[in-house]
Image 1: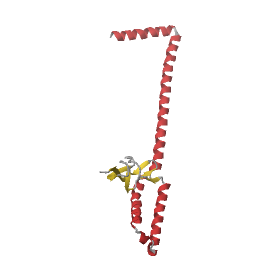
Image 2 (image 1 turned 90 degrees about the horizontal axis):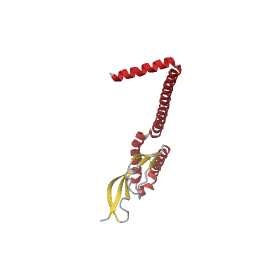
Image 3 (image 1 turned 120 degrees about the vertical axis):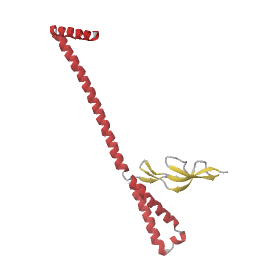
Image 4 (image 1 turned 135 degrees about the vertical axis):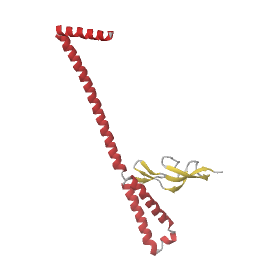
Length: 182
């Protein structure tokens, strides 16, 4: 109650002074307008920064969508590439020279090269694994192989090829890793 009376008295005194001295009222009005201007400038800067951040995020998302749109399809087509590679590796050398099968082998090899070319055009690359150190970001260890020749943790066998799409992992390489020989 006393606080309200003090505030009311201060305002009454200010009003009486403002009536007698218009420059006080003008000063109060200028101070109020300056405070409003500062607040409006701050809100404008904040809104502009937020707009720029939103634009940058939208551009990044659009770039990622374009760059990685084929990821699902690429994962599905990798099994076709695996089966083609298995088919080619299953053909014995003596049958490769056979005139009856030479056209088939040549066609399968050409298909494999074309598939590799399509992968390269779309930023899909095979992960080099043999002889590399195990990298859990690109390789998945399936087994340990005792080895006196290779350092422990070195990849000595590739069970299934791994692939990257641009800078992202598409499928990890399934590998066998050297361990210390018993």
